[in-house]
Amino acid sequence: MKVLYVVSATQVTGGGSKSFLNLLHGVIHHGVEPLVVCPDQGKMYQDLQKEGIKVANCFYRFNTYPPFDNKVKNILLFIPRLFGRIMANTIGTFQLCRICNTFRPDIIHTNVSVTGIGYFASRLLHIPHIWHIREYGDADFDLHYIPTRYWQQLRYTKARSYTICITKDIQKYNNLTKNATSRVIYNGIFPYADASYCPSKKPYILFAGRIQPAKGVLELISAYIAYSKLCQNPLPLHIAGSGHDIEYTRKCTKMVKDACLQKQVIFLEEIEDINTLYQEASAVIVPSLREGFGRVAAEAMYQGALVVGNNTGGTKEQLDNGKMLLGEEIGLPYVTQEQLVQHLLNITHTIHTDTFIATYEPMILKGQKTVRELYSNEQYVENIVHFYEEIINNQLDIKN
Image (tube, rainbow, N blue to C red; front, side, top):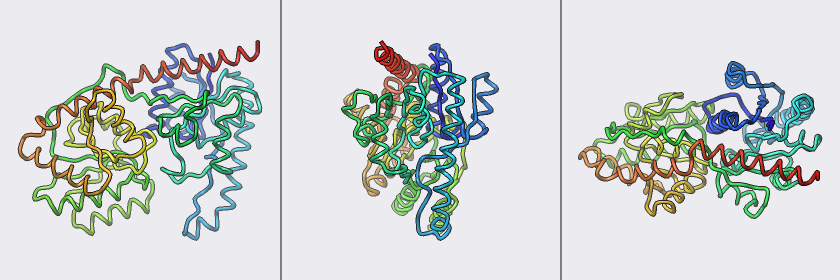
C-alpha cells in the first residue's frame, strides 16, 4: 500500500505534527510505503530525509482566507494575500499531481483540513483522498475556508473523499456523524506501555502550549490573578510555550506585570521534552477555548498529572470518555473563571497540607488508565490502517 501524506507545516512540536509523526512511523511497520509532502524544507523535512523516508517539497499555503481585522496592514494586504494563496495552491496542486504520477499512491492523506492541495490533486487524478480533520477552523483558530465552510463540508462528502475526525464533536460540527465515509479516530499519544507516574509533586501549576488566543492564556492569567488575591501562598504558574503571536504574548506579559506577579507567573518558552514538567506539576491547566482534540490534556494524564480543563470541545470529550469508561471523573472540569479559581484554591490547600496524593491520586490514575486504553499509538495506527484497507477494498469493488 502506498500513501502520500500532505502536511501543513514542518515544525515538529505542534499537536498535529506529533500525531502525524506517530502515525507515520506506525504505518511503516504495517507495510505502508509513505511519501511525505511538505510546504518547505524545515525540521520535519530534514528529519524524515535523515531517516530515509521519502519526502518532497511543494509550494502551498492554507486554503483559508488571510487575516482580516481592524489592523490597517491586514486590510490593505487582504486582496493581494488572498490572490497569492490561491496562486500558490494552484501551483502546488499541479506540482503534487506530478509527484503523484511518479509515486502512484493508492491514497492521498491530508494531515489537516485547512490544507487543500491533496484534495484538489485527488480530484484531477481520481485517487481516494482522506481529510484528517483536527480542528474546527473558525471556532478555534479563526480560520475560514475558501470559498466558504459550506463548500468545504461539501468536499468532505464527494466521491472518493473520506474523513478522519479526531473527536466525535468535530465530526458533529462538520455534519459528518451519519456519513458512511467518515470515522472518529482519536490521536495516538504514546506507546501503551510507556506511561509513568510520579507521586512526588512539586508546588507549581503548569500551562503547556502555544501562546495564542485559541489556547485561552489570557483567560488563565486572569483567573490566576483572581486566585492569587484569595490565596495567602499561591502556587507559581509556569507557562511553557512559544509566543509566535507577538501582540497576544505582549498582552499576556502586560497583564502579569500590571498585577505585579512577575515572580509568580514564569514564562518558560517552548520546551521540546516537557514530560518531566507534566510528571512533577501539581496540576496542568488546559484553558483552551475549544480544543480540537486536546493533546496536552491527554499527554499530561498519560504522564500522571492532574488535569484541570475548560469543559468544552475535545477537552470535554476526553473527560466525558473517561467518565463513561470508568464511571468516575478523570480530571477537574470547569466552565466559569470562578470554578477554575476554586479548583486552584483546593489544589493549593492539599499541597500545603500534604494531602494532595490522598485527595487526587485516584483521579490521576483513572485519567492515566483512560489515555492508555483510548489513545495509545498502537490503537491509533491500527484504526487508520484498517480504514485504509476499507477504502482500497471499496475502490477495488468499484473497479470490478
